[in-house]
Image (cartoon, rainbow, N blue to C red; front, side, top):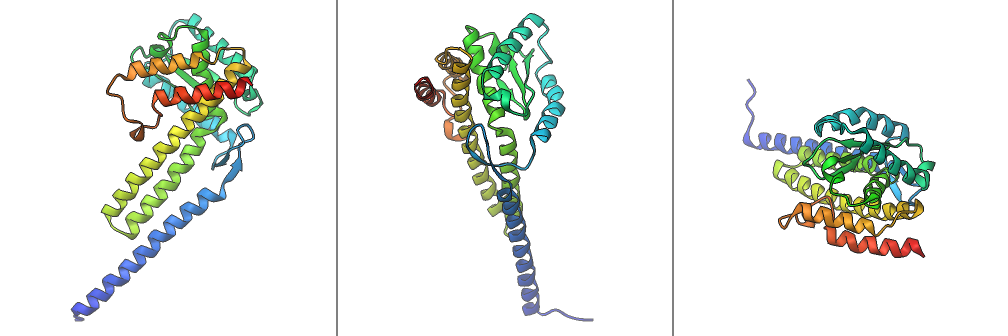
Length: 267
């Protein structure tokens, strides 16, 4: 029978710690390599992006996810007249902007949800607006502002970019968890979450900027997008989440950026 001494046990533990550290570092390095090796410039925005999926994969993912997203919001709104109106405005925006040059087929969905004031886009061109938000809009130009913003997310490939960033942060957190200790991993996860929210705010501002451009190209009044921001601000109420803890910039900050975009694109 072999008896391990205290010193040998300590050596074994140190050896295991080294193996875990090397394994953790390897996971992190692989995640970094995977993320940075997939680099391309978005031809419509001029922005360098790290994306690991093709446009066809984005389209397939959006089509696959669309029924589930609609179901989460009570299905589609039953009045076809309103749906036709949303389609008409959305199609006008696409046909008069660079969106028509992309590989995506844009579909616009009016959701039944009467309570959640929201609009969102899935990868590949599936765009949604809830009836709760639709019913608060004051005119066609405001609807164009909402849809133009969401088209901006698609053209900017924000969903695909966000998934690549999430893959990177998951690799880093997993590597830290394996190579170090749980408390360090929790700290890394908190930092990653903060960074991802910051990136999300940047995506929103870029989509506002693109939305203004699309509105002008289609003959809509881009100043009405400011009215949409006021609707969102009123809906959030006085206790809205601070910007630093949100994926969306504060409506007041968005209004200032929208004004700058209007001046830029009207020149």
